[in-house]
Length: 296
Image (cartoon, rainbow, N blue to C red; front, side, top):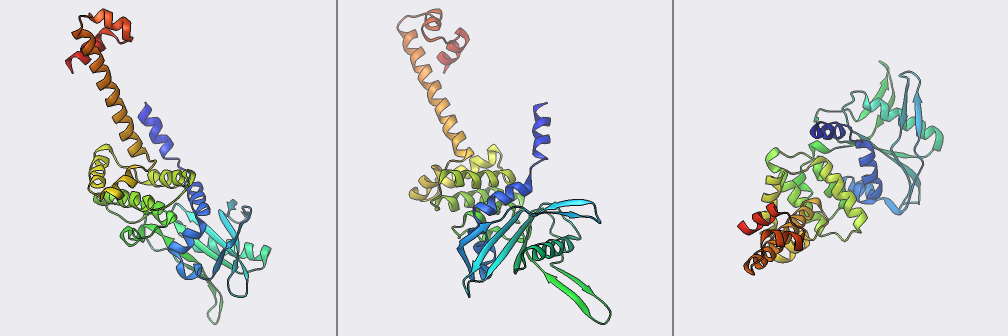
């Protein structure tokens, strides 16, 4: 029954919320990591996140909410622009039209240049048009273009040398095979071990990564062996990370230590002539547990 409950919860992951939190927290790192040409012209010290915009599509009868909208200054002439980032967790064939509608509504309200970016996080590599055009036989009325980050089409190996928190977390959604899962997690840990981040940001990165790439016990044991093979200084840094795998390893080690201590105590008391009942009264361990420890 518990397995069914877990699967039901897992199927209702709020992908847009997770991506919004990650990208907004590491906004500069995100733009620099995936759109370096655009990032070079942005003064990130001026970033201001605006309230979420909600638009009603009367034709389709839908209410749409823009996820991330930031106001920034450009380095040249200090021009002010908006950056609209739209995470998309499922394939939508008319997405280009949707991005244009968002753009037109935002421009109508703010009357300033807008840089539109779509982040595709789904595991479907089919092409999605990055332009929206309206034309007649004799003239093109409109040609709209937006930037795309299609994560499944990105090779994780191209990013592992970067000390970039947004890039590190998003390795979990890039293109990798089933056999590469361990190596991706291993490189993620190496990346974040080199970063000096506060615990809250580290927890956000790690929680995001494990939402999309969580190793089983056998895979994590293999990864631990790979960590042990690193140079000692790097291995120590990785092993100190506050992640669930190493926390579990510490917990297992603690439990083993407690059990060993109990076994030594019971053996000493038994060697001094105490019976199992005497030891039970002195330690609050059950007689069955005392017999198990004596066998060890």
